[in-house]
Image (cartoon, rainbow, N blue to C red; front, top):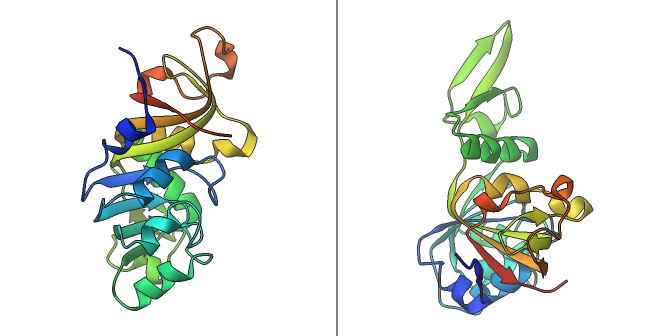
Length: 217
């Protein structure tokens, strides 16, 4: 199966109300072309799972400004004043998750694990509504997995089978999100023939990637 599709075709994989994971850390290592394509559309009611909501003019922050997002699950929103405003006005449901917990919730979502106990958040608002357990004299809260219907990831070099190499810190949440979604769309800075990536450099195997989009640097 030819996995390479256009950004336009990728955009049409996203429907109203879908849960969408978007990789990146302040847009470094994110699928910018596809994200911008969605920002130009009328797609709405997205459940957005992302490390941060960028800025009002950058990355998924544009989705927030356009009011295309129904709920955000993120580790911080401080650089996007519009996210904070919508949250405070009751226009946007925001779930803030400690960053390590966020990464682990996605990891177990991909691994098929039902949950994990962590001390992070005990005694804070993070524990509200969650199961709490004392283990060996220490309190822990139960965190449950995160999965999405679609994950938008980004690779530096991607072969035509979808094997992905990430460049340095642009790796961030990409490998985790590639395992935790029903459909994985990888935006590639460079697409190469199968065999051109040293197998030792493959970080996300092609079996996890459904579609590939040619993006920019």
